[in-house]
Length: 510
Ligand SMILES: *[C@@H]1O[C@H](CO)[C@@H](O)[C@H](O)[C@H]1NC(C)=O
Ligand SMILES: *[C@@H]1O[C@H](CO)[C@@H](O)[C@H](O)[C@H]1NC(C)=O
Ligand SMILES: *[C@@H]1O[C@H](CO)[C@@H](O)[C@H](O)[C@H]1NC(C)=O
Image 1: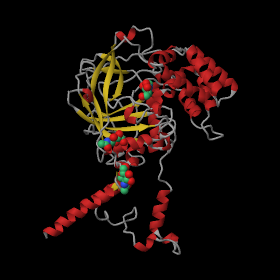
Image 2: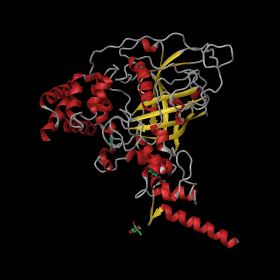
Image 3: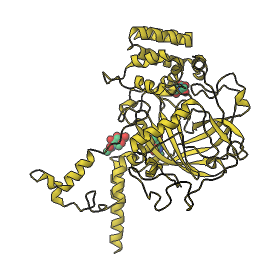
Image 4: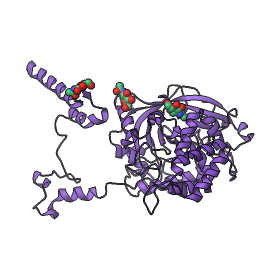
């Protein structure tokens, strides 16, 4: 008996070893996934059924020379296959997700009463979705464009969604730019190819967007991995504390793996692996090198925010040094792969309007429009009950909304479905500390190239960085029609003479 136990044990260890190694190479977590499933389930996990639950008979699994219409297994399988996609996101289509937590390390109760940021040591579970910006599903991870990190904190006061970008600035402030910018950056409708001319044509028409474009075309646009990027929710958020005092902040997630980019190795080799960033993240979490980010806040009080020589709500520019102070908040750690990527990444629905008490949120026009249009896009992709999908469900919810396309979950069972009522349906809370005033702001449409020039001269810190940026711009301008190219060169020279000169010189070489 002992012998049998020993053999079972040894054989088990042997299979697991041979399964996870290939010659003398240890396979990465992503390469071991199927074999690890088998180790966990030494026998088939159960009887195969149709989606209606009937056991499938072996003869139904071969269909040639059979009467197809009576083969329920065939119909069930193929008619489901025909519909197994949900509409692709227009922007940030390609992504990957992970679970983790946020841990508070510093007391910031002075600025916000938000539960998620209060009490040193408090841990809040969260979901993140990293994504490329412009690429469609299946596109390469390594390409110079805007990466995203959407975070959903499952707090006791509901979901708090922070939608971050890899640059601390965003292309524009007028919501109407969105449709045209994304169209100009994505494939040309006629050729179905990326089109440098449409991209540059939009930039010369709307020079504000050039600032963020410079960020993404520089070293900052080709990080070594998602783990080596900083992330920023770009807007200026209003926070409020227990007394109802208001503060204005910008959130910054700083990578604890260090900022690193591919400029030393070039992008040719890494971009041969379409899923370079996704693979890296999965393997890092799979081998327990859990990636993490420090959250810090740049803060101004409601007095400071009124006395500036620039618009602090303008997402297309950074706050000027010396006008704010920075405080530490905590750490975001990712420690779990999703288990099923469709269920978690494709079916995740983020909405910047999902805020929590203590974070009244941004007041700028772009944010107000995002409150509308994110909800609209999720309703289109995942239907009206998208917050009932597992990964989007808050820890607690009781509503008067009902019915609609599934999932409806328990649909609030037999509770009253109208408000107000006399029969003990859910009741609102009273929050005396909620600020009753909101800041009203006005934004200018004037073109200001100062942020662009600041980026070139001060964010980029050495000649190597500036030359690499100029080379990338020159390469892209080489494929652009003459009139647009001339105007683009003029614009670059207006940003900075040296930049204009380097790009022109680079163009001559191409
Ligand atoms: C094991 O690794 C060595 C050194 O890298 C290599 O030369 C050898 O071919 C490998 N053996 C097998 C069986 O893959
Ligand atoms: C990108 O990486 C290179 C090589 O490590 C480094 O010299 C350069 O400063 C980095 N760029 C930025 C913007 O950090
Ligand atoms: C874990 O994976 C990451 C990403 O692929 C890699 O950089 C790191 O070296 C790996 N660590 C170990 C212990 O294998």
